[in-house]
Amino acid sequence: MVLLTLVNKTISLDLKEYGFSMKKHPNKHIREAIEYAVENGWDIVETGKSGHAFCRLKCILGHAEHQMSIWSTPKDPETHAKQILRKVKQCTGDEQ
Ligand SMILES: [Zn+2]
Image (tube, rainbow, N blue to C red; front, side, top):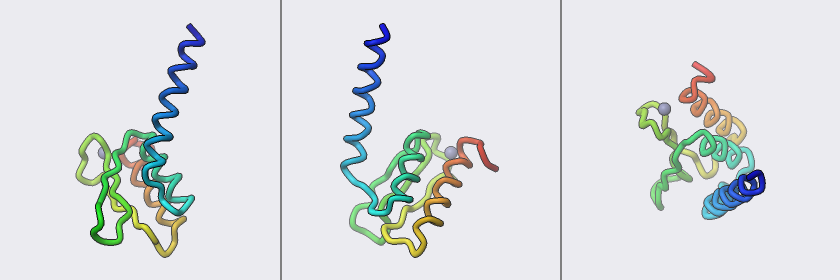
């Protein structure tokens, strides 16, 4: 039973890795912020070729205020990453 659980866990982790490998943000801080958002159930929305946005993030609950554009080359990647984390926390209720 324990073994079965472990195997299932490994498979789901592999699928997750595969998903992220499709498109990775070049900046480490922002990549981690995006992963944090996904772990909290947020969706990545591809923005295509238009604009400077890397992608959009939105909460799966569909709140209009819980979505934001992720820039490909922000002036300050660490600050941008913190903005992402703050936004995700607004939806999870960790921060008002
Ligand atoms: Zn939300």
